[in-house]
Length: 438
View (tube, rainbow, N blue to C red):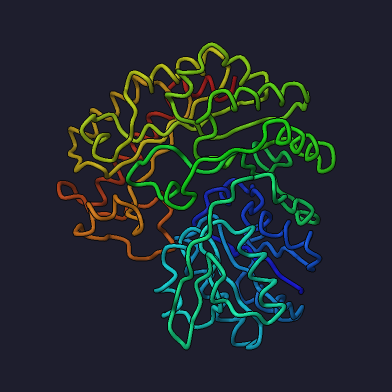
């Protein structure tokens, strides 16, 4: 069958401000198994050039694929854009099968199928195995009744089959990297770049994060095979920067160290960036030199807050001491620390913001990224805040960079002003500027 993987132009993605984009890893991961099964697959990336939905719909319908596969890493904030594109395609190509996947639709399948009649099926959970089975069933005209991980309409009523089991062997399905051909993806100063996953899932249960609920269990790639794949990307695609999309890549210390050593043995001269837990940096203090030698230049550390009561309420198992020690250790090994701080978990006052700034200055991260607590409906955190006023109902802005929830103590304009003030102070202090340029 002929399938189009389509990535919509996503207005909330911050990389557009810097003029850089990373490839849609989820769509590439779905495309690889379809290619290997003999299907004709093409990637249409509207996000790369900010292509309007009307233009994307024209291109899709002109090519007349059998299947339109839609998904986006932005998920919740991208969903309204995907809905609009799929309606345009359905109006022009009424017989085309339109399939949706991703984190947001996996949890909101019932509402989407009721409100958006243009979708034929929704892939719930991981996409590689489930999408392949679905495409094979559609090609053979088989019933979808017993197909795990599929939401669809049975006699006009939305239904969801039994969930598919998590993919036990992450090396069983390859990523369709060749779909990047003809697209220029860059990061870290316009170097050729990719998103990559060494692991999936997280062993921690932070209430505001939906990743654990989506991936269900923590799993990892074979360290040697993963290093060889990155070597192939360096050799065949000229990739210089790898941005790890893992939620918690170092959950298993022995496996993570084996991966670092396998990368070092490949001698790839790659620039590696990613996210990691601060307590894993502290745990691995004795071999952080391997992080640097493997190519890691920056880690994002989810600080989220300094108030111990708030941290306990959101089940963020961290401490100020470990957060500060992780930043210090990374600096000692020449690795940039980018701390993310979440506003809105507590009911902050002006005094709280003052103490936040004092603590962040004491943390002394190289870079800072402020985000806003965002109540994604499928997370446990949503239940604790569902009675609070929603300031910004436009779902396209639900990207953690806009204030969604009203504060009981301060007006929204003052919260945003204080956040921007803290951000400016943190980014322009002499030490931060020195580290940025030198």
